[in-house]
Length: 640
Image 1 (spheres, rainbow, N blue to C red):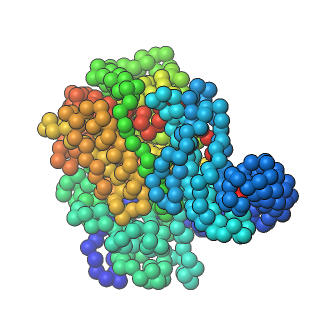
Image 2: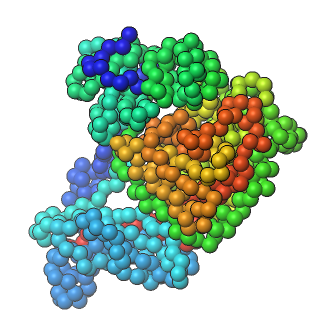
Image 3: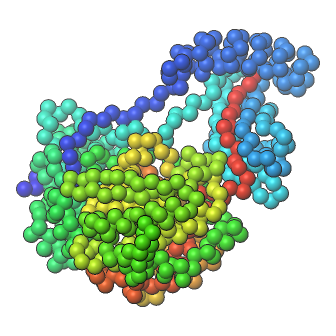
């Protein structure tokens, strides 16, 4: 039975809910509160009220008390004892950075004031790694960045360093800005309050503004066939009442229940789904139902894209990922060279192998991959071994990630190319390796051999070059059973506090029957706080199409629809920027989806090849070619 505070159009849901652990939102912690820190907030451990450790309390790193750093008592920036170089007590900002290149000509220093755009303020000799900004004013906020230059070339920017000058010269010295650590919330929204009852319900809540502002534990953010946005919430009725939202109860007892969201492919299949399991809602685009593993797989056989509801709420980005938003694909001759290495012959060769048209070499022996279904036993084991050995043949670090679900287990394959200079920043290109149908021959050429080949080619080509950011090449299993493999991997990244700049997920990019080369780049909706980061990735692809003259073969559409039926949504749910690269499934559906005829003969190799050219170029720009190593550890300190 459906209970409603107000009767609203019924909508859909997404995945599986288990007993939900309690979780408190992360709190910002001053670095001085760490073991060995202090208690006065000045950044050192001596309790003198400054942050320099010199004992004079003025914060200037020398042992006098004139508020400068020159060792005399005149308050200027020289050591002659007069006041000719700086008005006594006027602020200055000292910048210090780590030089990671040996062959630059100079360093460019840029500054941004009170939120304005960055502009150049100095060019520093290559043998220096510091700069003193004498042109700052009191009571202003400044942000700095630095990059190495050689002729017309330049490195990526350093980290940004911010300071705030004090409003009056007589006030205590302004402390150095504290870096808050991870940009992601530790836990997302709080799950449940003490409601007097621990019985939780599954409810649909309409969305009319920013989703994160609802203040509820949200497990799915969806659109129905009329483009109405809504979310799925698991909470007590008292919690829902207190929030003041309009809601519909879909299930009166959500404790320990597995939920599946299935995006349907036709009226008959949707009607048949109701005979498989308990359908809670059908919104015209998706169904939400209680379903175990076998029921979920039965839905997949009917042609549904399956997503499981996570056991914990969606994590919202704590703040905008500026590194993602600053992505831009300006023409680079080296990246053009990279793009030209994607050829139709190579795409055909790799796709025929992964879809069973001819044998491949696995463990030194020939093997024909007739299916890649997650439950197929030896075939999927050989398929994962095949891509593992392929990555291992390249200069990459390769590993498996084993995962276990309630009634199945398998493994993901991960290849890593460490970055140089920004190695803690991670760019991911991913595809699911598994396929359908669940028995017999399953070529899965479009779904998702096309994505598998994309990751293989990206790894083969990009591993020949050096990038500032770390690139990870991922192959997931369990996607057809509800994104199981990618959910495990995204959760692992989140638990590790990984700094993921962006995820480019490829799923079905090989079918084009109408010779209109439309492709879709799916992002979260504008009401979702993760939307800007997703759109930045999609726009990078659009830039690549324009900058490298691919427009005659590709027509990209940035689709801000929140489509969540592929592995990218596993990363969305952990707060990471991600998109799904897909063909035009709206107007040119593949009739062989999840069928034996999804084979090489029904793939448009020209369309797929150009799509992969754009994909490899996008990852190359996101990862940043390492021409000059970027300066690191930029620090800014206010001196008086």
